[in-house]
Image (cartoon, rainbow, N blue to C red):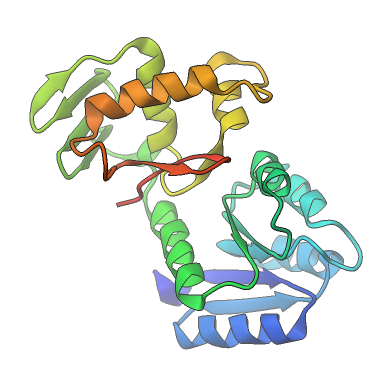
Length: 231
């Protein structure tokens, strides 16, 4: 998909934007660059990029407002690339709708890997699976029949565990915050009370993960939430 994949960089640091633009173009991506929010939103609405790399500290608008604006009309993957390192700010950006978050300074290899994750996620949507199934390695989830298999053997999940697994799989590769998960599963804001979620997630892992010390599917984003492996 790379040749047809359009990336919008919204970054006011010319050195970083030039570096990213050159690196992405060398990898075969089509690239648009904007130094501010106003121009970035115009490019977004005009060229419909497949992915956005977004700095939060822009001269004319906070990056969080851009995320909110874009999420009114689009679910395009947004990877925040920011110097803000506070856990609270990372969670806030993800709760607003960012798909991923990487802090400056960053390694190009890590950023490119996260871009590939977003690219793969776009190339397949569980809602479009013809057989309405998720199959990967030893795990099979039949969404139509609500059945889960590990190494061909059916396992029993409670309704909450199944809802958690379904939510994680339908957001493969995306970081889901504790608060977002709690809101989607239980219908209310979770605040700082994540103990219940951790218990349910531990039980789910115990049922679908074969190696408790090296998780295959459900990854923990420390202090933030969870991410389901994209491959």
